[in-house]
View (tube, rainbow, N blue to C red):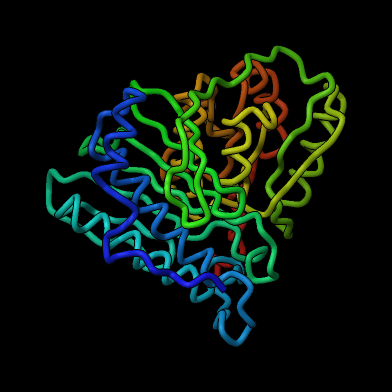
Length: 316
């Protein structure tokens, strides 16, 4: 394991702020989001490779028996500590501890401290940490995603675009940022698509059907890493041009990646409404805007009666 030697609120808030400003990312919320995500991700990296006993794996009945580990909890603590210190009174919606109400007028953070826990618990290296910060109207101002294994930080800001920064082994920013632009593709011919890795009684039939539709549109292959936020980041960074998420655990599974895609010139829509995703959204498609437009009617037909991947659990 990697020993976590960071100071209590380390990873250089002022230095990080200065580097963000060089790219035109001027919001305090942007700096806070990426520092919180990086500090949480250092816990994810430090604990990676632990034994099942050390990971203290639990299975969440309310979330279709998806797992939780000590890494999820420790990453959550680190990120929330940063949010509380630098954004006092903010409401925090964190995957493992739920909604913690803040003070009126202080905005909200949606935080997934470890996305891709099932893969992580098996020692795989695909998991991410994602966080978004919204104003009092619910409009996202900033988001950050850290892939600790690929040493990448994605940062997006309303009006400031989407940027990718390299990280060093301690997950400090190690170089200049690169502005990202989603490629404006107009055809699925030859495309690779990222699909949500969770398959169960609710997701399998519509997902297989939609994948068959995409093959008919010219898609040549599918990929999945086990982290929806990671897959959304890959679309934002140009490693693919389209993806689908149909096992949303909360808005934190859509907001950081979706915001990054949109600020890079892409699109993410609620399949059932065709509109911007909300807290009630169960399935989204995302990527190059024209590909989203082409695929939407196929996805709507396949997911017409879809109630979410935990629908059966909710009925109990």
